[in-house]
Image (cartoon, rainbow, N blue to C red; front, top):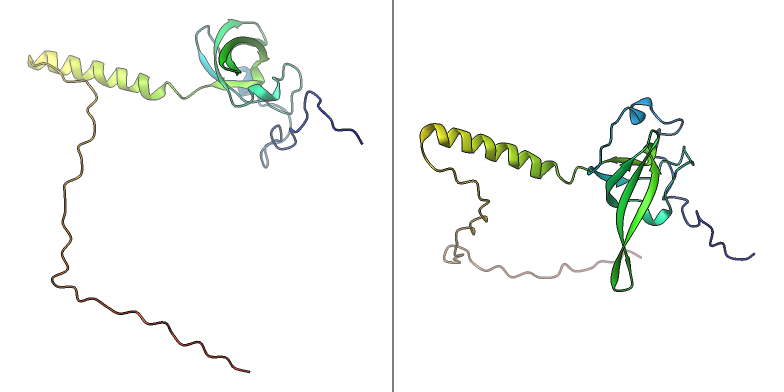
Length: 160
């Protein structure tokens, strides 16, 4: 039998649904709103074949550059040889979700704004720059109270 190189070749586990997550797509998936500039993760939902991405894009992160009623257009950079090619992919909403990669950054921006406001009230300068972790304090190990032990192999007995 000839080897298959089809569009969904070798995707038996890649596109499989999680345990007890089979069935139709939840309605909350369709209620998420996407805007131009949002960072999204592409994860193909096998229960909806329309607008499904190619297996290469599964697990990739891109930026939304266009929004339609049922789909979004995502900009992804694909490595081909020694260069990055800009790929524009049309995907239905079931196959994308908002990325969590910027959550830490946005939380840090809010914390920094709060620190600056608090410092302004006190009349001091706020330090919001991230500092590297200090090295751990040095310790020395002494063997004054520890006597060396000699380890001997346990004899092996055979019962025949």
